[in-house]
Amino acid sequence: MLDQNFLPAHTCLHLIRHGVHWEFGRLLSGRAGSPPLTPQGRAQASSVAEWTCRARPVAVHASPRARTMETASIIASAHALDVQEVDALDEVDFGAWNGRSFAELADDPRWQNWNGSRSLARTPNGETMMEAVERTVRHIEGAALAYPGETILCVTHCDIIRGAIAHYLGLSLDNILRFDVDPGSISTVELSAHGARVTRINEVPA
Image (tube, rainbow, N blue to C red; front, top):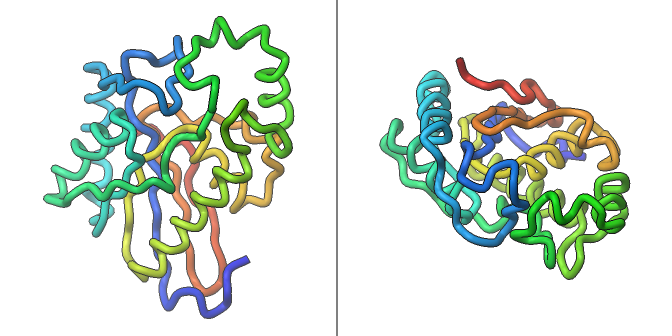
């Protein structure tokens, strides 16, 4: 719950999922490797850049993964802004699952438990979903304090965005697979002295 003196004005944070990369759909890239964006992924980033020109952002923050940094760089260049690398926006630490194929994971009971019980399960030698959400929310609310009344772009990952949205909607983390966050999509959280509200989920610029 936000402090009632949290912000003097609405601060808007657009949570942007990176574009499609060369491991997309085959591997749980996680924190392993550094797959670049495909041509489709770069086109998605360009579409987001065009869409965000209406928003007049003052900062572009990004997870340190190559796919998010590449996406953020394309977006930031449209606004003549530098990309600020932010560890708190990093992908979930999937531990021993980082870089594994989804085909390999399909029959792993730990993977099935992770996807059925995100509020409790821990990745093998990695982090829990709650830990990932807590660090993300700390950054979102810290950024809102640093840029009151402004717009900030945060380029990050599917589950990180899902977790943040679930947090602000008051949803159990067990329910985060009930909505999609597609590559190149924008989800929006607005924060003010009255609290936080989600105003957009999974909007993909045309």
